[in-house]
Length: 503
Image (cartoon, rainbow, N blue to C red; front, side):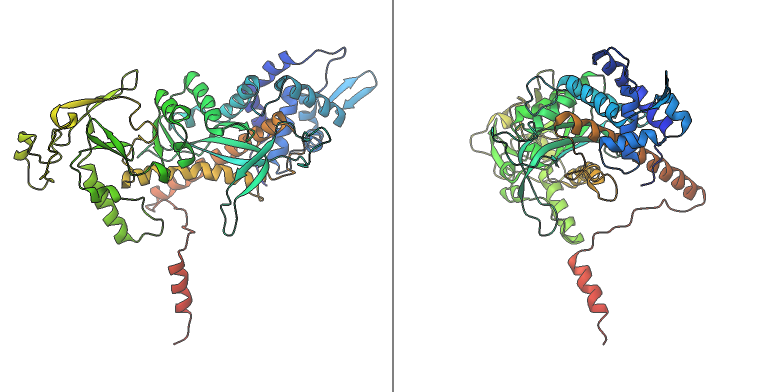
């Protein structure tokens, strides 16, 4: 795989992270100084992955020894000894890596990263994202995927596995004919930078990662990582997630993300869709509050199918827009405790209602409430009502679900899918079983972080090349180049086959 990751560029990322100095201070000091420093070891790991080689220590040694003479002497791969020049050996690579693994491992491994290890991973990834890129967007798309361990998966006589931190997890088959199955390994969670709503395109760079065993719920474990991101001074805008996150207990994801100031854009689980009781007389539906006189037919709206025609899309969006007229609107931002106030749609001049006499002066183009509730609830009597964070705690989000605005905003989640696909692609990194032949959370985490750093550099370069090309095309009066749509529905395939049949 061709890569722009030169030794100088990789060393710049390592130095910017500040990781070498911190880890060197934690490593034990022997009688003789180590020839291989942490800085050189990380450079060898990055060089190995940038060249498309698997994450083996023997490959790391080969990458360092294969450098030109100037870089080998600069990195200490070749040093002077009393017997003349001494070239780094594989045993020295193995020794330094084992020291690193020991200081980054927990005293009692439990399948979750030690705080020091997570800080190292965060620093490496953040150093691979330039300040110019971080200023372009504050929105993230999050997801997790499965990573298999190299362990044989057979228990030892004492009942343990060769990889003591990995465990059995469940993964879904995403391809045609693939079934759900068990795997032995870890869950890898990623946070990929995406453009803000209606914002300019940004490079899809991975800002954070977390590796945990399936014995731990990956969602709250990754929220811990995102909290540290915010506490470091980085503001989070939108967080785009699938129903695997939205379905979690609110205290594990939704409430914690809102407390960080994030705007959620989620796909709701089927169990969380539809009406979910009332509050103050208003109907809780798909994360929002609606007038109690809302036509019941509007509550039957489901997410738009991917195979929907253009006409079906127009009808669906028209129904969603009609439903939005009956929604209680926010009249205040959330306070420090998560409380906010909402007003009746008639007060907001969205519908005509006899209970709110002033609204009857509105145009007849607005819907009219013909049969208001016989016993008027608080949302109809009061001008506004206070909504606590416990109401729609799991399902409340930035856009009305499943409106056209939500559909466009949620489409950004495909960026994190591409991040997962990039490192799993056999043509690039291919983190399949055997990619890393070291067992344990620390070796797998370090090599995955290095793989993501290399990926970030390649993605940033490709993005800048596209920007330059688009600027050139605009200057020449041409439209920017767009990606070719590869998805072909079965109707299109059938039509193509019919066209080839001779008359």
